Image (tube, rainbow, N blue to C red; front, side, top):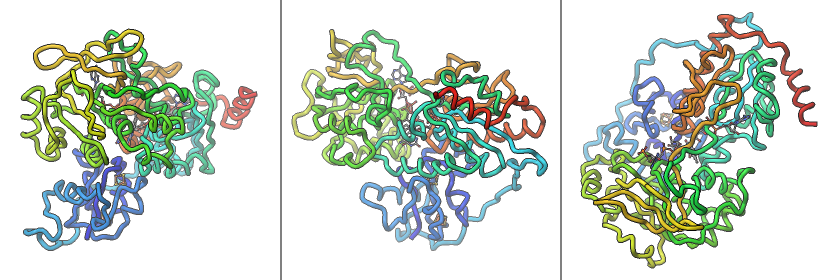
Length: 507
Ligand SMILES: Cc1cc2nc3c(=O)[nH]c(=O)nc-3n(C[C@H](O)[C@H](O)[C@H](O)COP(=O)(O)OP(=O)(O)OC[C@H]3O[C@@H](n4cnc5c(N)ncnc54)[C@H](O)[C@@H]3O)c2cc1C
Ligand SMILES: NC(=O)c1ccc[n+]([C@@H]2O[C@H](COP(=O)([O-])OP(=O)(O)OC[C@H]3O[C@@H](n4cnc5c(N)ncnc54)[C@H](OP(=O)(O)O)[C@@H]3O)[C@@H](O)[C@H]2O)c1
Ligand code: SF4
Ligand code: SF4
């Protein structure tokens, strides 16, 4: 009965390498891999061996006949990717056997010469990018790896960003954890490079340093009132519900009825979902106790997702919209204030951005009325509207937006800016202010031999967890090539001396 890939897929392609019949696509070698929202299983070629389900770090692969409610569409979504009918449907050809594929020439780009001494590599940051890089080094070479993170828990955004109602995605942290305690790895948490130890000290004790520091802050809107009390970045809100040590438990109050979330990327959808879902479903997840208590007290009845462009350009991915559609007790509405919105939705295919909204209620919203009183909560998608001001006195009262014939006000007691994250310049490294990234070539930091970048600080703040795996492969490939070419500066000390240095600093 074939397997299907479902909502939590983070496109890390672990399953691709274990499938005996190569029926999972796109593969990292295929052009579509760079832009795909998830991977798909060809139901016609799958031989039901289950190897992909065992290998998947986020439990995204399930037998089609055991898909739970809310994930059933994924049988169709997987089949559609290959233009197949579902098994049992009229016109379905009998399974025709494995989908044999030209695998191309094998590549051995992780092999160091046998007489090569162990490399000593420091990795700053234990998010997905840092841990995929560590995995590559530890599994494919004899390198000794020093992992450093400024926070008390490892995992980066897997720990402090991924929503608590995505426990399967959080599970990827478990598969990463084994690299933190690998016999050739040493992990230092609560240690900030640039403060507790300098970049120069780290470099002086290792052959190479990889910066995997992510994008620690948020993009700004640059509009009046953006910093008014009640206007908050999604970065802070997400950190609050994930018990980030630097966000106070009382940083967020939910005593208003309507919240406007600016942006319609997956972070905006995470935030909207958490705000309107039944808090009972969050108990027992990793959500912070203070956030669960506040969500139980919450007066929020409506969340408005504000997109400055049309639905065909929305930043969310289809699986995350599907998750919203399955929320109990929550209505979804598209504000039909401009004929271009409905036209874009009607014209879109099911797998296009606008197509994800097909079948949802559509009507113009009268913003002078309070949010609905039906007892159900509501998410409103409002497109073609950019914020121009956060209005109010000592508190946020409304958001002034463009749209239709002019500007209008959407009354709201809180505004959450989910307009993207932004990298912070790592001490001692060149930095491109325009993109918030460190300039590099294939992961090699420009003008700094022996220094590398990976993940969001290298590519900018986009892409799911799995995208960092391919990114890490490129960076580690560059590092190993430089090692073999003798292009790494010789360090003055080694990891033991570094350990002593850290001990001294912590006294
Ligand atoms: C709110 C949110 C939810 C997400 N949910 C999903 C999801 O459900 N599925 C999915 O596939 N993707 C999701 N993503 C995307 C995914 O989290 C990112 O692709 C990924 O985390 C980027 O990895 P990174 O290692 O570059 O950065 P990060 O994960 O941010 O890791 C950077 C690490 O570096 C450390 N660090 C920074 N500076 C220093 C320093 N000076 N010294 C020491 N350590 C330092 C930080 O503490 C952090 O641990 C989400 C992203 C966000 C923002
Ligand atoms: N479940 C998951 O898999 C998951 C969950 C969370 C995050 N992630 C991933 O993490 C990455 C980051 O997500 P993100 O949501 O932070 O970023 P994002 O996908 O880049 O979305 C940012 C949103 O902000 C809007 N925006 C930017 N500047 C704006 C401005 N000045 N005014 C109004 N709107 C503005 C963008 O609109 P424009 O498009 O018009 O610029 C877009 O809608 C993404 O790759 C995402 O898929 C994945
Ligand atoms: S069940 Fe087996 S054959 Fe089917 S997709 Fe998974 S690994 Fe491939
Ligand atoms: S998360 Fe990775 S292993 Fe799991 S289905 Fe997606 S690509 Fe395959």
